[in-house]
Structure formats: structure tokens, C-alpha cells
Image 1 (tube, rainbow, N blue to C red):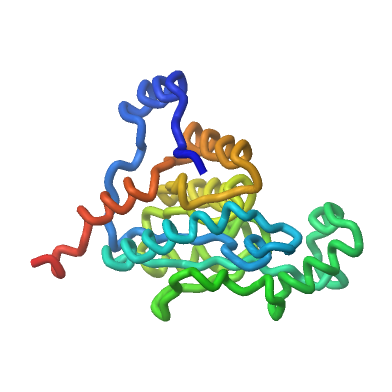
Image 2 (image 1 turned 90 degrees about the horizontal axis):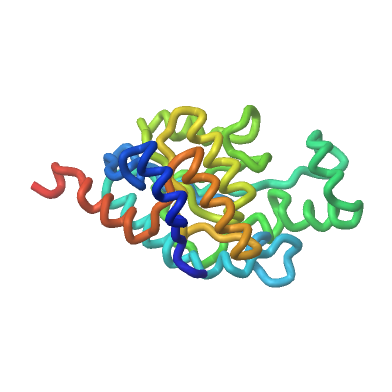
Length: 233
């Protein structure tokens, strides 16, 4: 995965509008959440219907971000997509995107008890982290999940979006996150998609209209500055 770069012309437009390239240059660690989208076997493991091999490359960055967010006093939330039984699923337009056999395969793996539903084994998940199950691309739309309630209970203001796929569930969740009133950052090298073109297009669109895009290095550095004062003293 190549480093994400904002084209010069777009950078000029963003700076003219914002006064700077990055909308969110600082954030309170204890009011920050790392939201990890769909880092499950179904979207990573070879042979799965919707596997994006590039998702394996971002695992170290996600783990690094998780450690930094915890250290800063923030929240880590692991979001898992769940496929409903096709015979009972009320998401008709989604079902029409798959033929009958593909729908069965999707449910068999991504249903609550399927192997595809499980988080990728190399992720550093801690007992203190939150886990959320979602049933739509965006975790924020009505009836999709309780992610918003989880974040509000913790007083979260800034949300870091990571996971797979950049241009599908990550971008969908990130857009709605911003429109629900959270400062939203997509972490460029902690998101992955099915192609570099899809990944880059989603990030460019997001930084232009919806929020900010920063690298893992940038986020970790800013979180370090915002470490809880009581622990530093």
C-alpha cells in the first residue's frame, strides 16, 4: 500500500477553505475512540467471498493505534458485520446484489456462528475494549448497531475510522459518524480495500467533504501529546 497523498490542487483548495490541510490537528485522548470496522475472517481470509488481502497489511497499524488510544485513555471498539439468514433478512436490496448460492455462502460464513464472523486472529483485542455487531454497511444508521450509544456513554468526541473496506463500510460509517456530530478521521494506512484505486478515491472524497484523513504515525504522535495528565504527573 502506497502512502496516501493529497494532490497539490486539492490541498490548495482545502487550505483555502480550512486555513490548514488537516481539520483536526489535536484531540483529547480520553474523548477519542478507535473504531475498527469488519476486520473479520470473511473480509481477510483467502477463499472467502469478500476477502481483501490488503487488509492483512494494516493489522500492525490497527494494533499500534489501539495501544495508543488505550494509553491516552480512549476507547477501542471492534465492529463486526453480521449476515442474517437470507430467509429472514429484511435487507432486500442487499440480497439482490447476490445470487442465491452466494447468499447462502455469505450467511454460512458471516452469520453469527460462522467462521467468517470471527475477528482476524492477529488483532490485539483486549477485555476492556468494546465490541459491536452491525447489520448494515454504516454502523450509525437507524437499527444497524448500538455503536453511537457506546460512544456517547464514554463521552467520545473524536472517532478514528479503520478497517475494511475503505470505500464500503469504513467510508459509510465515517460519513454518518461525521453527520451524527463526531469529529471523524479516516486513518489512511489503517484502512484497506479491494484495490488501490478504490482505497484512494474513498480517502480523497472523505477529506474533501466529510472529515480528515491522517496516517497512523500522525495520529499516534497527536495522541501521545494528549496522554492523561494525571498519569504523566
